[in-house]
Amino acid sequence: MSSAFTKATIEFVDESLKGTVPETDVVPTVGTSVAPETVTSK
Image (cartoon, rainbow, N blue to C red; front, side, top):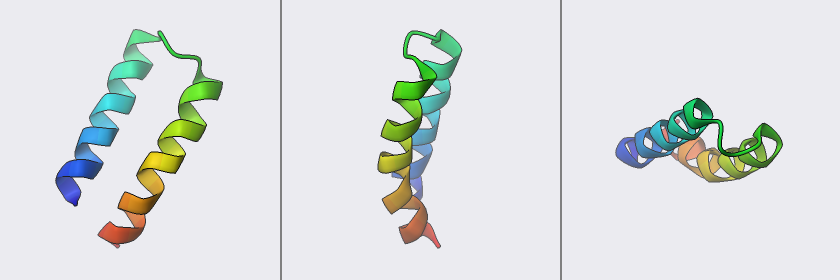
């Protein structure tokens, strides 16, 4: 589970650094993708 969460985090940071995706589009997408992983990790 942690590896999946790490991958999602890396992808989010990578996109943020690129700045190719608007924050308004990235935030909801990442929030939806990361939320289940976060709940599972806890």
